[in-house]
Length: 120
Image (cartoon, rainbow, N blue to C red; front, side, top):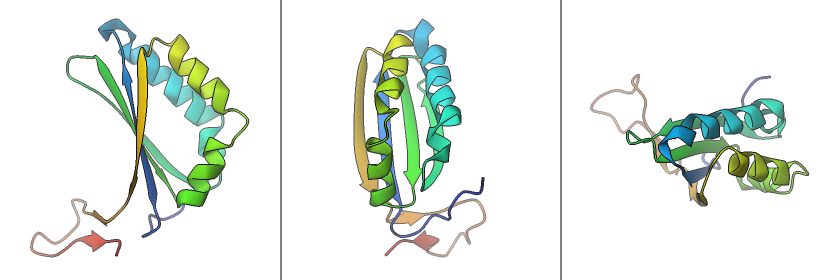
């Protein structure tokens, strides 16, 4: 499967999970299993990047979608309840999400003095 390119229409979801420190890795594993099982096959999925706080009490999932319509398709997917239950079963005590539009990005290849990539 090839990932679509990041475009100005790119839709970002940042989901956070509060966990007891021993459960952080279990939540990461639960999210990755769902990504591998079905989320990565959703139309418009670009990437999922999972982070754990240094104190192991927060797990953050930064997910990129081609556009808001692709993200909406993910939200309406019939496996959505399975995803949420898997995260709860792994030990997430609190879940929250925020949505963003991509307005600029830079990577290590961007010219230090330049503007990098912008989405507008």
